[in-house]
Image 1 (tube, rainbow, N blue to C red):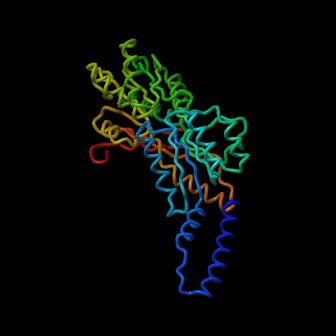
Image 2: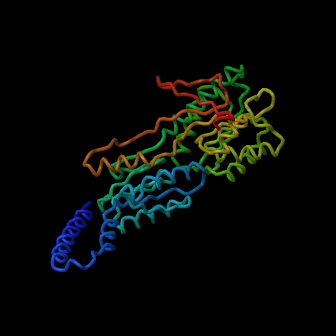
Image 3: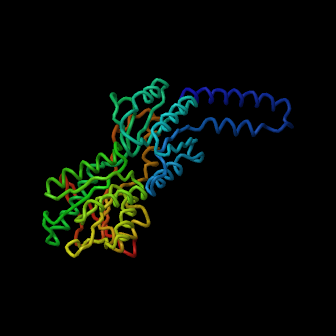
Length: 354
């Protein structure tokens, strides 16, 4: 902010000098290029370190940021793709500090290991806003705000949908044999969705046969599903921690001669997942190959921009800002689930709205 005040003062001095000069020599053209450069430098500079491009959801999240932090909106965005590596993100943050950006936005690949570099940002006087996954730091003043999903709640909601479905169809807990294809181990989404799953599967008495890491990618989802099938022949429900993993699991199951669907009493394998904005995954819900998806909203750009506007105005935004989300399914009989006294709507996906 000091940088912009200095630039504004320089701009005013330049304008005064230019007026004095043109008064004596009105035929000389103004330096429009200098004007343009000053306007460019006066933009709010945001450095954004993104996890990568491992999924359709992640790409939508990136586009949400890029569409908001534009020159037309008064910003200059410096974007860095970490390619799933924390070391790349730490390097990017230090680069942002050296370039004296006004704000740093971080979508962390994992929760831990951020204390040192975020301390460096605080010492430089640069506010840090965390999006999507959270950070586990010794001092939460190292970041100003966090925006994202309650991943544990997402997991619980999907499990509650499954429980309602099983009750509806008369399927007992003893008939459920479920495997969890986890996301990137140590990430907030993985920790939350796994914890939600563990709590609810214990509550409902389901037989959990295996956990395999899928890293939130289709290729790793295929690998995880193959590993599960080699050991567990009785799996009839697969809890995938994002849509990309689910699509990979479906490929492996269908290649092995299994049918993906909700009728597990007649030999089908139920797939549930998270995100809900992947076109291919929505098509799989519409045709019944995915039974339920817990919504995870990727549109964080406007929320982050609102935080920055408040900080620019000297206001104090809320520290933690959770996104409200629902559920997608192909079962019209289940219209909602209730948790902690709050009802979450189930949106039915079919051929008309997939």
